[in-house]
Image (cartoon, rainbow over all chains, first blue to last red):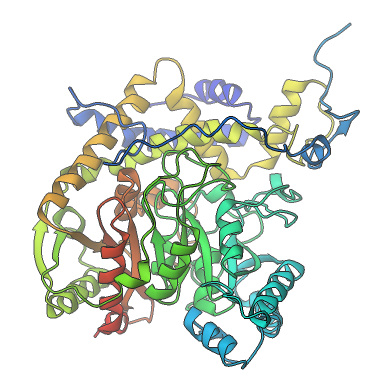
Amino acid sequence: MKISEEEVRYVADLANLKLTGSEVARMRAELDEILAHMDRLKELDTSGVEPMAQVLYEAGETATLRPDCERPPLGQQTALANAPQAGSGHFKVPKVIER
Amino acid sequence: MEIASFTIERVQQGLRAREFSAAELAREALRFAEAENPKTNAFLHLCPARALAAAARVDEKIARGEDPGPLAGVPVAIKDVIVTKGVRTTCGSRLLEHYVPPYDATAVTRLEEAGGLVLGKTNCDEFAMGSSNENSAFGPVRNPIAPDRVPGGSSGGSAAVVAQGTAVVSLGSDTGGSIRQPASFCGVVGVTPTYGRVSRYGLTAFASSLDHIGPFGRTVHDAAVLLGAIAGRDPLDATSAEAPVPDYTAALDGQVKGLKLGLPVEYLKNLTSETGDLIARGVEVLKKQGCEVREISLPATDYAIACYYIIATAEASSNLARYDGVRYTRRAVGADTLSEMYRATRGEGFGAECKRRIMLGTYVLSAGYYDAYYLKAQKVRALIARDFSRAFEQVHVLVAPVSPFPAFKLGEKIDDPMEMYLSDIFTITGSLAGIPCLSVPCGKTAEGLPVGMQILTRHFDEPTMFRLADAFEKAGGAAGL
């Protein structure tokens, strides 16, 4: 067995994901099968291979820095328009600090 | 108006001849899409006001004698993971059911500048995660060719509208095959351009090192025109490439004699189905056009699925962290603490496939597993990319199947995620290497189900990819001749 229900609950906690009891059981079985398949990567010798974090191709230098000039931002009201709860120009969330 | 079979060229002819105005065409397209959509559920919602406003701009330009652009009056559908200002963008998720973006994706801005009419938003797997479109929170899409079957995924709606005729062309997104596989299942052309060729500004991020935007069309020509309109450097996407955009339609000249094609032996060795027969017949068509064919080995192929589902889920777990109940419309009720609110919102908002991928991605990135999974997968990715660069030292183009099988029945594979993942084998490799690839119709099975042939080329060599696909199409490849 690659993964236990306890580990599933631990990972769900890291991912801020609330899972029901039956979801945990099902997730354990599915992840187990998928992780077993992923283990086959161990067969492959990758010593001396550089990890590929991005697609690389032959090309001239890309100017990834734009000129540092002002651009109008979205604006507070627009940025807040999709907030489930907003007020006084802020996103509102449940209380995090007790006075 | 036989709008269901219109091509971009046909729309231009009609506008030039004053057979119809852009506004008339837009109204007819909207009427037709609304009437036909219940058969497939391919559109999630239409945006008539936006389409009609764009049509009016095209008509004004024509009236003033100005060039209305290469997509003038062309009804375009947009996958609902690509944001549209003022038009709901759900990503196929309950979480974003009511999300109205405050800006447009660059690809959308560009196709409208080229005269295109955004008709509506298309159904897809939730956050583009899936191979069947069954992971949409708003119901599956039915394949227009065979309504009891899936259209493929994740861009199932975008493929289906083009096959059904309710849009002329469409935009999809591809992370591991999400354009090519549905194009193959629905019998249309679908293009995944070189990584960085099209700006992803406004594409809802799934796996940033793999995500692409690309076009669907009923012909290679239409897909080439749409790609030409949206491609090119965008200051708003630092990963978009500086490389100049050639005129892709100029490549559609039929000059394929002497082109060297490679057949990946690893893809074809176990492919004994009708799909294999149709691909073999397609290769014969290309030989008759004067192409030289040889076998090519891509030895790391067997490791591609494992590699992809580690990298893609790792990146997804990070990208989807933003849906936390603070900024994006949906928040679970009744949570007393911030942390409880995050958990409950995500737990009730995400569907099963998204949860599975968030979990997998979080696991492979977690302490103690990073080296064994994520770092290892990045090294295997380098080997897969190296396979392709070695192949392209010997041949110009690779020709391969898109999917091991044609469209399967709704519900047939949804309960077995691992089997669903394995079906992505032929498309995932090109995505990992970031090379341009497309699916072009290559005939139908005895049951009448479309099969696509995949054409893969070197980075930024879209012209050769389009040239070969166009020659194949014109030689009757789609009819399986």
